Image 1 (cartoon, one colour):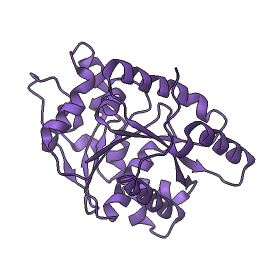
Image 2 (cartoon, rainbow, N blue to C red; image 1 turned 30 degrees about the vertical axis):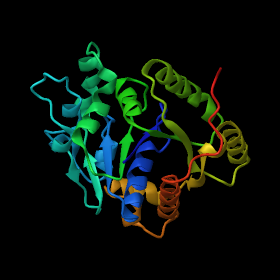
Image 3 (cartoon, rainbow, N blue to C red; image 1 turned 45 degrees about the vertical axis):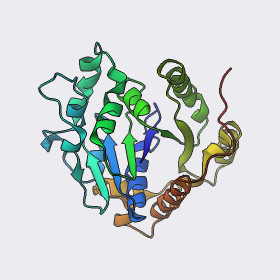
Image 4 (cartoon, helix red, strand yellow; image 1 turned 60 degrees about the vertical axis):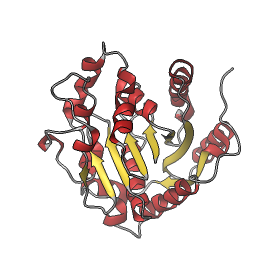
Length: 268
């Protein structure tokens, strides 16, 4: 089972779009996929056609401390989506209270990871949609995952915003002894601009072969599909967005056997 967090502390860089559409594309390739919505905005839950406020069992119940009467096991909150092979652990706005509720709990950064291990799930992939922050919810996702996909929009401040995120990963390596593989995905790309080419070169220089070959192009079908509560592969399968995410899924599947040739740069 591969556990992949889709993360970036910056908002508006297609984390949720990637989580939903990569998940659906992996499901299209006959993989059993679970999406865990760790964002209090519940955009993955909404984007898969559900009304978050209708749930009385969410991922928040899974993150409750061991002695809480509201605690549930992960398998108790998982629901099927309309997409074959694709499942969801939903969220709603109540998840925003997790930061406060877990602040003084021992081992709080490991609650999600522990729940996944206890559940003994049979999924091929678990994709975790992270909130646009580096708080306890994101830390839980990073501690639970074995791989991280950082989504980056190609603009001037792309790499500047990544520095803090990479420092957080470095702290996890040192303090929690957890070292996930890191990959980078370029999203919302307008390939016609000189700025795009400059940023791509800079990202490739920094991340090497940790950058996916697939580029997610700016495409209106992606936004329209989300507003209709479905993956783009179902909304408009011939669109550029659908083809981009199908290509990305093939790359991700290829990594089941392949390993990057070049280790990610780290500070010394």
